[in-house]
Amino acid sequence: MANNLLTNNIVIKEALPILRNKLPMVSMVNKQFQDTITDENARAGGVINYKRPPRYIGRQGELMKVESTVETSRNLVLQQAGVDVSFSLKDLQLSMDDVKRGGLTTVLEPAMTAIAAQIEVAGMLLYRGIGNVVGTPGTPPTSSSVIARGNALITAAGGQLSNKRAAIVDPFTDASLADQLSLRFNPQAEQSKTYMEGMMGRALGFDFYDSPAVATHTAGIYGGTPLVNGGGQTGSVLATDGWTPTTTSLNVGDTFTIAGVNSVNPQTRSDTGQLMGFVVTAKTVTDGAGLSNISISPAITPGGQFQNVSAAPADNAAITITSGTSGQSSRQSLLFDPLAFTFASAPLALPPGNGVAYAGRATDKMSGLSISCISDYDIKNNQMLTRFDVLYAWDLAYPELAVRLEG
Image 1: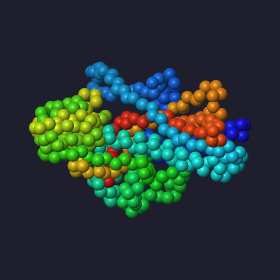
Image 2: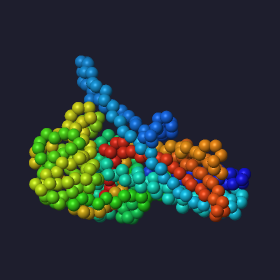
Image 3: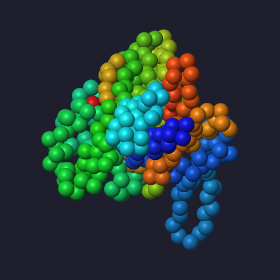
Image 4: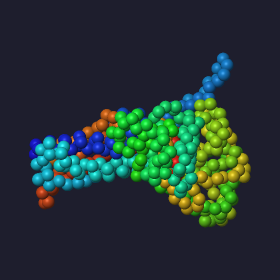
């Protein structure tokens, strides 16, 4: 059994860097809550509640103006991804050198690819909470100007002016933009990043990654001339009218703008001159009169510490859907500041005592990823059954710092 344990230890240590290098989105996002989620007491029930910093308006002059400290919070909810395989006892006679030359690691590449795909897909599906969009739904972008506009939207929303912004694009968007981006990539400057699988280079303010995990969004079925139904509305539900009666239904992730409602910089509260992008958070139902109450994000907040729009919408302000024509499907590549998304991975509890032949786990200090490997013997089939598991959590912490690149 000693050789079996040695082989398993090698396998789990080799599995971790393979997994890490297949997760470009994980490598580029905020992981500041990693220490919290690894604390078993803090993550009771598989949920971590983390706080976002308060926001203040400030004052001019020396007259004191005390403001309330209002903290908002969000949840990191743990999910589990894994792959289950089996090895014959003959396979487990491999020496350390055999493992490194191929051996059992021939299983690791596809196994880690499968786990990575689940984690990346879950991250990319967070597009459903992002209201900012650039590009034309259903048409891959051919001009780098759409990337530049996305960069500007992030900056206007208070994104950090740094070299850490990332773009994760689908292969067809990559191919469509290839000529434009190739003029801006500097292969020599990017050679140090080749260890990160999928890394294409840096251009237009973003590190570019090519990923098959990019999601596809299908717009709802809608029609009519939608308008705001009642002026001065605030909050996360918008009353509307003018839709095609009965048959209209917007999908979660559909986006729209409202005439006269611009975004503001979160620090200065100055009007950016750009219409605020809103996203539908619950599937809508339109009644026989063409009325519909739409659950939206962000909540309309025209004043105060958390002001995000230049004004509340006026009655009969026009609504424009930006996520595609009725029923249209489009790829949802992402442009983002690292603070837009939060990721954490937690070590999985191992079986107590000597209940299995092998149980171990490894944690990568660079990414925070933790993976477990548990093996036990199947006497009936003379096989060692082995499972790899990862506990992880995603959250869209600051949706205003991300942009959907539609194509």
